Length: 153
Image (cartoon, rainbow, N blue to C red; front, side, top):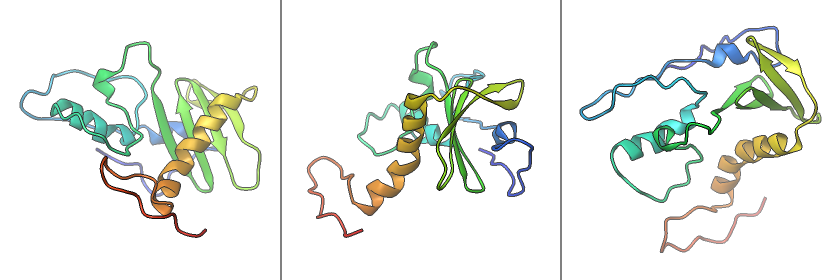
């Protein structure tokens, strides 16, 4: 999988088009196909586990791309400076420190202001905070292993 350069530039609050990078999964038994929906690097782990036929409990918030119904919109997470964006289909929620969340439409490669979408903005915040909080508070443990008491903030 590729990654965007450290010098991502653009006129939009988050230059979404600059976060479109290629990924290839190559190996014996991997079906030859083009996946054209929105996806994110967080989806690679669950997709690889699915291709390997491994059904496992894990804390990854990504999804097995090859197991999603066709009507399921793609999603992606992006960080640009202090802005964190969460794209679902053609809608993008952006969170920045000390500012209210914003919702945009992604049209013709540009972010256009849109009416607030509280559900999208909430989902964006949950995706943004989950990894840090689950690690800090030790919220995830495989089945059968007791979690230690949470650390003090």
